[in-house]
Length: 197
Image (cartoon, rainbow, N blue to C red; front, side, top):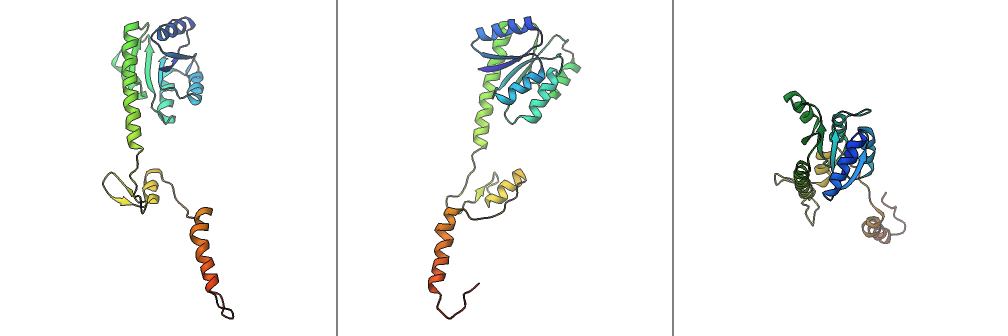
């Protein structure tokens, strides 16, 4: 699994990268949340292991940004030296953190947390695939919603995205449907009679 390790301490980063690599993971590193955000914007990484306290952008701010700005789900594990008080955990959970690891994390802990991350990401992908299926009538192109109500595609998409539609005719449909009608009208035109406008 490809994952992003965000750690400002170079020695800790090197140790964790080696440990994660020994577990078979492809590890990309960043020194702070801002650098990590740049990587996440370019690469479709789905798992982040991040230190809490870092300069520029800390782990919680990175997690908040991921939750508010990325469409894909990213599993976020927070590394911390802070004592696991109820207040700290509540702050982290509110920011969107999925799991915690105290520094230094053991090989066993890392393996088990990443196993859970992999299973959750796999389930998330399956759910997204199911949600992306849209039941559409082969004839009239109406769409069935989850309450078994059939409606026009414009209404279905409009309700879910706020999009509005303007109707037009594509070149292929113009040639196949409109042009033959116009040609038929033109061929039925009798000389001396005004054309219907």
